[in-house]
Image (cartoon, rainbow, N blue to C red; front, side, top):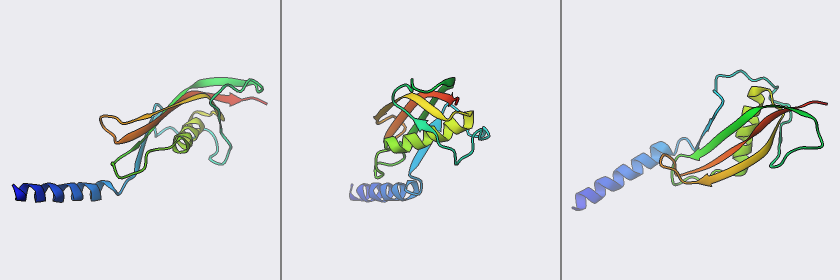
Length: 125
């Protein structure tokens, strides 16, 4: 019985060490191999509401999910989700994401997640 507890402890420490090398995983509805449509230095606006004071063309939905890989990592934040939204917005040629909503929790395949979704738009001046 004591050997089983030691074996379990060794296995737990080993898995924690191996999985501790990567901290977060990001997924989205836009394929990663899509070439960037907007320069990485350009500003992308993230808004939880609509931006009615500016004219824009709707491009389409953008959804991302930031997941922590182990119980030992901090929960993903809105800021991390926003960074993922910005990256995906650039890929589709959007310079803003409007009507953004967030959802967080624990899933079957992750110790914690932060989902963000909104509509990618191209602001026209």
